[in-house]
Length: 459
Image (cartoon, rainbow, N blue to C red; front, side):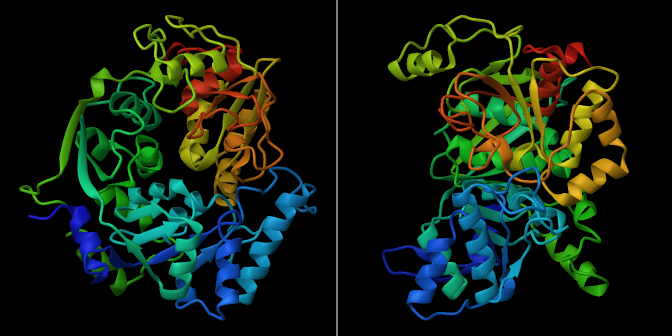
């Protein structure tokens, strides 16, 4: 019996190249401003049009400032990138959601919330965190710029089929433990290269109990385990989330779609290339201490002393930490809530639940950045903006923000940031910035206490 990954992948194979890759049909291409300019140039140079322009959606997110978006972008490089995407989308007849458009936001937040990412689809974007869309029950993965051009020209891509892995997590998550903590735990267990060459299906009672937004967070971080992508089989949680969204099927088409989507699951006798099982009870709120997302510990644990390899010591030296050190109580300079990992409404609800009735620590700079204008609207409709403002926080405008320092939101050199984003590489949040990855609850706890704090103490 085939795995769900096999079912979706094989249904999209156009042809097998002899002794080579497969030609895979792509249902949806997302384009942002950083990895698309050369692809458009290539199309222009060859005199090509997009083969299926209605399958392609473009929006700027990496370079967009998170303030004064109604004014011209000040940074010349960012402005050139964003302007180029708008011009290219217009020239090639593609749907474009520009800055200040109510449809704009981080591409991996907007796709699911508009119903553009659906079960059974193949979805690509010139961005490694495209695996996020796998939460919808889709095969979604990041591609390179030359491959973006390939999809524009043919709506197909040449790919070697990855191997399949199932990661099952069972049991109930403890108090204060979120899907972000689950992902950080998995990375520490299997390392940042442990899933290289695989596509992961997340399964088990813990994953089944997760909300759609929790699954989006989990799938977002698949790439940080080295995987090509990760996904969750669609179920009632998926269908309830999708129903009634802008681009989802309606009426009779909806019933037909759901009937098909219900067949999208691995058989009871499906054989995976690798299977791993974990217990939810073993997971506590997590933080990272090093310079890759797999270098993490439970928040009450100490940095390991056993790993004395050069890379480990170099990472600790950069972070200004010591082997054996506990990080609870460590002073924090910046807190960032947002990114395609944790910029959704549930993340803002979680953050607000901790800060309600408390005050932001005076010496902490906090950036709270919704993943889209739709999230921003919901924050205000639910009155979360009032809770956050009363606690001394301000909400910025949507964008990738301080996840990757391609815009104005850069953490200064040497400063320590607790971030809900996906990567803690050297300089990822700004040259010399030090990043601890954490959940929205842990970030909120740091923001109000000014130090790394176990969020369970404030719940």
